[in-house]
Amino acid sequence: MSNESKVQAMIETAKAAPAVAGAAASSLTLNEWVAIATGIYIALQALYLLRKWWREERKAGGWLEDGEGV
Picture (cartoon, rainbow, N blue to C red):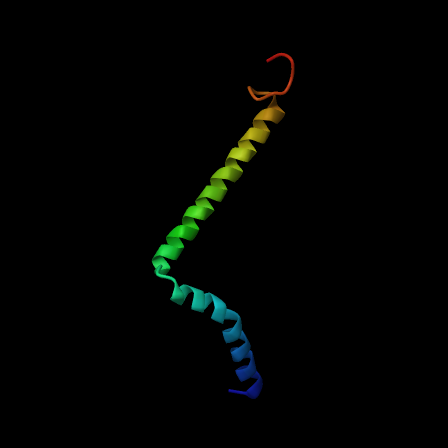
């Protein structure tokens, strides 16, 4: 391994150290972290979809239409 490769490996190790230390210090396993991240991702997707539907309904003049005719 060249000297430059060793330096690159050390830099990448230093970049990953905080995340590894945080994961090791917590009481949660990797499976639990993945479950938490998945739950957050699903919640964000649901909020995005609801916002999209809301905006489409208002634009199409559906029951959420702004106006005096309601």
